Image 1 (cartoon, rainbow over the protein chains, first blue to last red):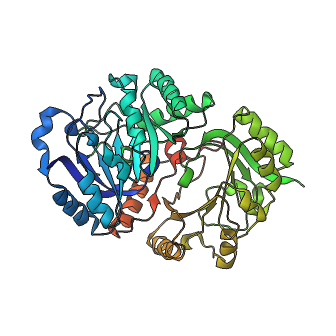
Image 2 (image 1 turned 90 degrees about the vertical axis):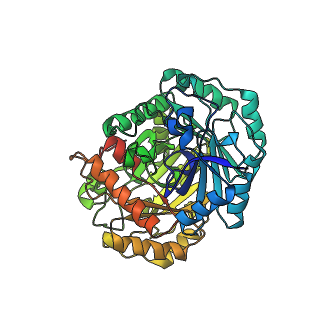
Image 3 (image 1 turned 30 degrees about the vertical axis):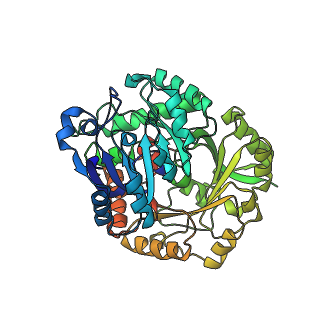
Amino acid sequence: MSLRISEIFGPTVQGEGALIGEPTVFVRSGGCDFRCSWCDSPHAVDSDYRHDWTPMKAETVWAEVQRLSGGQPLTVSLSGGNPAIQDFAPLIALGKEHGYGFACETQGSIAKPWFSDLDMLILSPKPPSSGELMDWGQFDACLAARPTRTVLKIVIFDGADFDWAREVADHYPDLPLYLQPGNPNSDPKEPIDLDETTGRLEWLIDTTLNARWFRPRILPQLHVLVWGNKRGV
Amino acid sequence: MSLRISEIFGPTVQGEGALIGEPTVFVRSGGCDFRCSWCDSPHAVDSDYRHDWTPMKAETVWAEVQRLSGGQPLTVSLSGGNPAIQDFAPLIALGKEHGYGFACETQGSIAKPWFSDLDMLILSPKPPSSGELMDWGQFDACLAARPTRTVLKIVIFDGADFDWAREVADHYPDLPLYLQPGNPNSDPKEPIDLDETTGRLEWLIDTTLNARWFRPRILPQLHVLVWGNKRGV
């Protein structure tokens, strides 16, 4: 069975969340069950781009990961779109045989048995500003898969998102928690405004610490600071 | 016995290394046994500033940490200067009683028994560009203290530092490793050049990944990106 792949790129460093700064090859799958209003990867989500998604066998994806990494084990990040709409078990099995690690980022709307093979599952439930609604039954099913580590990452655009994040986090007190400011200007053709980008991080830091909420780590999108909205880095 | 304290500030987020993004109150001690050529905290190192260092009892430091954090437990980072020239055991004992966590960053030139009480010891050996020489016997004595976690963080200014970091890291294969580009322009009175700062990070990412060295995490000084060289944040 084929995987629908939007892009494979790296090695670069992970720009977000628990693995920030970690050398990584990204396997970005095509297709998503959500349509977040501010999605920063529409080329892997919107059906208008589906002719750009390549059907690839797990073996072909794995050969490309090996080529890019020169056969040196590193972390492979399964992203999207929502990688959980496809079956990554064969790719993970191939990579783990050769000492590679696997992380997967998903909104937590679909639980897959292969989550249990992951070194890290990053659950990124979508806040109110996305325009999407979470199904917490499915989210809990994702948690039940028990990979080596599971973490929670929430993108925050505004005060309503922040309040929502706090409620969600309280409901999952044992998960390491990462907050990240939203990026409303993710057009790869437009340069980013570094001051505005760091300003949004500063707002989130201030909002969180003024509330004396000391549980979350608060992190930027490092790749946006370094490379703007350029793709493939 | 008094502690010599340069500044106590926060809550803010940790800007560097393994705890990047973590809500933190900083206790910066005054005095250092090193004189790194590019030191970014001369106000806590150079004897010219020693009249700015306040002698404080551990109880007084602890009261200030509690005031700043509103009595909500968080991570306290002992930095400097070199905090290892002083006795932080009483402060750590007070904080831990109240559920606070403690991290300490030091170059690894002096080992202290209280290292074993830390939640995280960040050993930051100084590369050739610093003009200092490491005493590896002392460094190994720091490692022997066995806090809950020990990590290695190395600042890189140039190719010679990079080669040196690789040798040092190979000598300590079991320690989580963080690389960070140097900041040659740390004068708090001067604005930073964001493009130049992210450019130095990009150089370090490229150098590390082109060498297919996938072990280290590569991270910026987040506080410099957000607040420039301003003190007390």
